[in-house]
Image 1 (tube, rainbow, N blue to C red):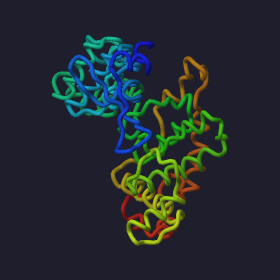
Image 2 (image 1 turned 45 degrees about the horizontal axis):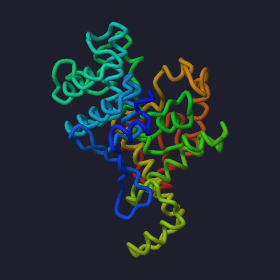
Image 3 (image 1 turned 45 degrees about the vertical axis):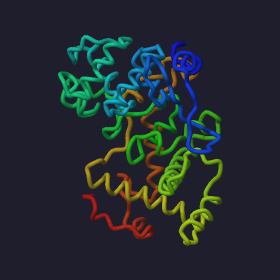
Image 4 (image 1 turned 90 degrees about the vertical axis):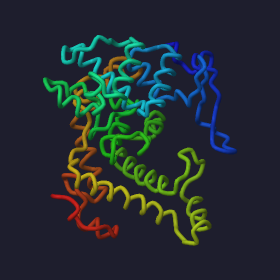
Length: 325
C-alpha cells in the first residue's frame, strides 16, 4: 500500500493542511486532483475506502472519498459495509461481481448504496441489518457494534480501544481514544476499565463545551473559561461530573431503545492478529468480561450494565423508569 502513504497522497493529490482560524495544528487536509477538490482523505477514510478494500491508489481513494461526500455518505460506514459485502460474496453469501482491489467496482457500489439501487438497497441499511437479512452466518463478517460500523483500530492489536468502542454510547472512536496511551505502554491490564470510564466522561464533558479535541490543556483551564463566558462558577470536578451524568443519560436512552449488550464482533475474539507487530495476538472474551464487570462497578451500574437507582439519584437523573429492567 505504498500508493496510499502520506507521501503518496502529497504527491498525487497536492495535499494542503487546513484548520480553523489561527489554529497552529491545522488537522484537516484539502486535496486537488483531476479537476476535483475535497476535504481529506484522512486516516479513517484511507483505511476503509483504501487498505480495507485492497485499494492502494491515492487517486482512487480520493475519488471514493469525493463520491461519498457528494452523495451524503459516511466514509467509514460505507467502506465497512462494502468490505462486508465483498467478504460475504467470497463466501457465496451474496451475488457480487466486484472483488477486493476493484476500485471501479467500489465506485459503482457507492453509487448504488446512495441511490438504493440493486444490491445497494440492502447495503444502505448498514452492516448489521444487511447481515441479518442475508443470514446463513453472514453476521460473522459484520464488523459493527450496536449497528455502528467500527473505526480503523483493530481490537486484536489495541484491546483498550476495542473495549472503549464496545462500551461507548455508540461505537465511535470519537467517544474516547485510548490507542495512544496503549501504544506508549502507559496502560496495564488492571487499569483499562478505569482509564476508559474516566476518558469517556472527559470526552462527554468536552464535547458539551464544544471545544477542539486537540486542546493542549485540560479542565483546570476550561473551568475558568466556562465561568468567564457564562458567569457560572464551576470547578474541573463539576465539569467532569457533568460528563459522567451525560454518559449515564446515554446509557438510559440506549436501554430504553433496546441496546442491551456491550460486546465486539466474534471474530475479534476467535481470530488472532495476522501480521505486523501484533501477529498472533488476540483479545480473549474472558479478559473482555473481566474488564466489563470492573467497568460496570466503577460506573455504579448493575451486572447487566444498567445504572442503579443509587447512582441515578447521586447524579440527579430520572430513575430507571426510562428503561425496562
